[in-house]
Length: 284
Image (cartoon, rainbow, N blue to C red; front, side, top):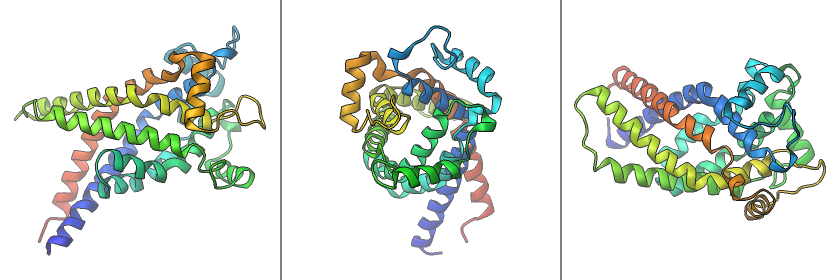
């Protein structure tokens, strides 16, 4: 087998292992992503006492969702991220690390994000929620494929993913060199998870204002038929002026809560699948 074929084979294994790890992580941790989105599209100005759709905290959101929408509602919008997970891993594998990977990944995933946010914002009982395909068709037919339709919020997605990847990978690789590797597999596993969690928390604290802007642009507008949140910068300014600087960090807690266990799941599944593929398809 030539060097080129070996590189392609290694890349295919990385994509397969990464896609599998991402699929499992998304399926398990999606409820926290949904809670994050619910907080980000929630305006601080519309709080009405006793409103079952106003959330004061992560567990308050989960409790109200469970009672009004049902258990499986926590997986609203899970299909789009599952569908795009493997292509996203391929983009990351063949892209420049950090910022470049984040930008190319964002362009690919943005249409899926638009559909996902639309599904996550729907507070109806799960039986009344339209399918992923129905939502996609409705967005295309009513809003089109452009920056007011299936690609709305793409600049916010680029900013969010680009900043996250730049900070995450920059910090991760800088710190990893200063912390010695352990021979014990369990200790080494927790070392990687710990570094990943700290890196992800730092990246989340820096990029979450763009995440809020993205959710406001892609989510339902306050007044039907009127577009309030149009651009990334404009959305940030509106949120800051109307709701204060803290509103720019909505959804940070569930996002950080997802990082630790999510990172651990990714590492375990990736290592398992990658090891299996190496044994199944050895170099000849």
